[in-house]
Image 1 (tube, rainbow, N blue to C red):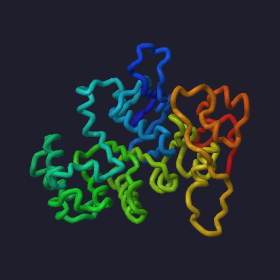
Image 2 (cartoon, rainbow, N blue to C red; image 1 turned 120 degrees about the vertical axis):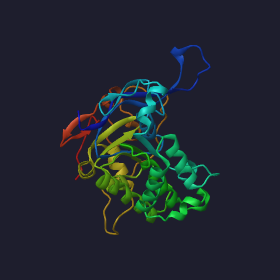
Image 3 (cartoon, rainbow, N blue to C red; image 1 turned 90 degrees about the vertical axis):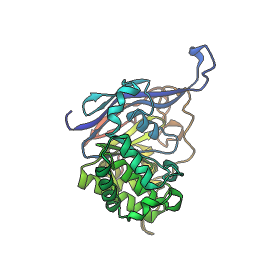
Length: 326
């Protein structure tokens, strides 16, 4: 569809764990991403949420081709990019930028911020006078002063570096930004500044963003739509407020229940989730959440993998026994 910037169709990404063995029939594979499909509209902030090890970051890296998928298709503005070679994907790199989780690790520690920005401008053939103007405008846009350009990354705070990481991504005027846990390493007060900057990017620049997080409260604050991922598959997806207010999957319920109370009198209606995500190696047929699910029933849950089904208002759930919770 013309209004979709990103289209993900049935993608799979497995990692072989015993590459030294010649017998592929007995090989062990980690199922990082399994039959995942969704669309991101132009100017939309789309959230992916799940615990560590759920596969959410792998999905993001597959979309921008930092990882090659094993099967499925990824389209960028109507053009299939999933099967492009490293050479052929280069023209798209300018339009697909990434903001990493650890801001300090994403900057060259031996160069000043100004040197880093000017090198990027040179790589993308932005004239030096134009680049210099854009750099200063972006520093002002993220509410920092020009003196940061003369400083090394280690001389700046995590919040300053993450804002500069956003400015660095914007320098080449991308259409799409992948933000992979961009606030998880920051203090709560600084998180709010970064999240508000994300919202401003959408409102003022029409920026399309894939926002990956483990915090449903953060996703609710910034995202238009959300996909809840568990063990490499999407278990619930829809408009963020719809998913938050009308929960159908027990895993989504558990994520909401795990967030801190916003008021001392708030009542937690759902049981907290126990245990950890099971191994993603050679996953068998059946619901992947069954080992931790309070609604588990022998037979259907253990023998048949639930598929995403529309359950109302662009809301999808993959559960054999979905129940609504208001």
